[in-house]
Image 1 (cartoon, rainbow, N blue to C red):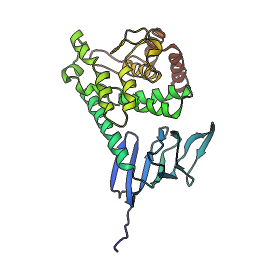
Image 2 (cartoon, one colour):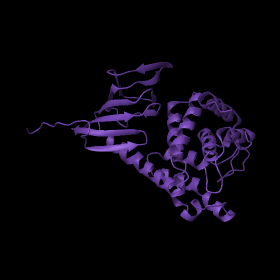
Image 3 (tube, rainbow, N blue to C red):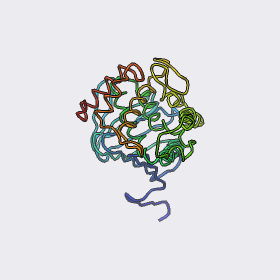
Length: 302
């Protein structure tokens, strides 16, 4: 029948996958969009203010549970409950307590924005990791550690979101590093390491061209060190933005515990001991303490 459209779980106009989250556009018309969003357990996600005051976003929980805060009060919503936002002023940070399935309806098109702006960077990030076969899923692991540190600091949802995306894309500049250097099965020469050291600035330039241009400073500073011995600018202490100081610890820990062709990865305890050794020298001392407490609580690492 003309005008009648029937579908099922496998029917969609377009699908967008970002790590453990996927978003399926199932219907659109007159500017409105209807989507189904699946989010794996224990993942953080964000709802941002729209560019138009006319935008309303409606979320109905088909499966699972989510958690967020309203005026410092924690709220948990479950299956068959819903919420919506209209004229939202600040970013909302949410967490999936179980595998979650949402019916997501907007009065203005957002799917194209989500898929275009994020997916391009996701794909570029994946390509940069594929160039280096020993960093598979490195960005996602750094993201999880970085968000956990950020959550202990009671930061604004806007800042946590910035940390979440910057940590995911922090090594995106490695796309410009020659394969023979990234895949070299032995230690790097000074000249080769100088090539590696270009990746923070290259990554910052790549995101400057996108909606996520506010991430450029964070990405550019994630290899700076408290004593000024880092790169590319040799910044010291609080000259390094907080987001980059957080990502630096998460990045170093994951790198230390990953196997390389010329060395076996450290155990989590060994890597944590190395990070503690350089607390106040390479890493922010307060953040190292927070990270150590997270590892002990979550994984029994000490």
